[in-house]
Amino acid sequence: MNNPGKAHFYTRTPMYKQNFLFIIGRFHPDVGGTEKACCKMAAKLHELGFGVSILTAYREGLPPHEIIEGIPVYRYIKGWHLFEVTYMLSVLSFLIAHQRTIDGICCFGLYLFTAPAVLFCRCTGRRIYFRLGSARQTGDFYRIAQLKCNRFILWCAKKAHGAIAISGEIEAELIQHGFAQDKIFRISNGVDTSIFSPGGQRDDKIITVCYVGRLTEGKGLETLIRAAAEIRKSTEAFKVLIAGDGELLPILLREVSANGLEHDVTFAGRLDDVAPCYRQSHIFVLPSDSEGMPLSLLEAMACGLAVVASNVGGVPDAVDPEGNGLTTPEGFIMCDKGILVHPGSSSELAAALKKLIEDGPLRTRIGRNARAYIEKSYALHDAAVQYRKLMAGS
Image (tube, rainbow, N blue to C red; front, top):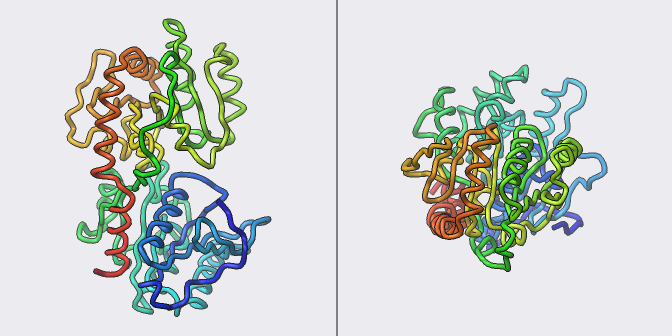
């Protein structure tokens, strides 16, 4: 993924139509939904002929600038004494130093960096947008509420040209906080459907259920392990593959051992390329307590997997966009593009997974519907075109 070396802002040549700057609090080697979305969108806009650079926080032990997936990344943001003030000043100083090579800015998150970016753009005539990654207890509004200068950040955010909402829940929260409807733009996360596509060899004698994401609180992984233990009472023709890393790993390993699932649950660690993980699996599971619009869900659907996911955040936007799902006696919601479950219910999750494990034709039908819907509504190219129009003011 990395190609270390001195990175420079794109120069103004006919090769680049405009130069955009993405600002994000954390970036590679941190890998989460927002980080992945930022990187993939930057790379796609670059592919479309736009110069894109990424500004992120300084991190000890990492180079201050490098090239990642063809995109210059600057680790310049730094807060020290009077953290909130100096953090914002470090952003502002970077923007002023590079103002001749910035035509527009998109902030991936509503945070300290949003305020100086808005002030800079309003004073220099650049376009500025910010994108929210999630809502409620894991959302941007909840996070900035913990900051002393939260009112200042909100005041600045409302001076931006617009907010990008990746789900209906986030759009509703923006309106709740006083943002004008005509300044909210619904652009979901996008998936490269040429990379994430059906294929690969699957062992249909053993049904593989996969999870891809961080091993952290709120992802519902303890619920998944309890559900696996419940399923194992009636069938052994399945296994669970968990890809990702995080601080919860030791606890999850103990849970697996306590439930006697050492031969049924595999931890694959962090994978730089997750597409093969999807292709060797039959079912994707996302038992989170909260989500924005999870990229892993969209990627799995693009690969033609039947999905079982918690009915939270932007998940129903993808799994049940028409709202036609039917609630079963077991409590889960059967949709034509996947199954929705209530977060925290291991019995409901077990029933939904068992339904797909035992019904091959149902798995295939749901997977095909999911793939077709992602191609139509969540293609990365289409999302990038929407970003380009916003950022370019066209």
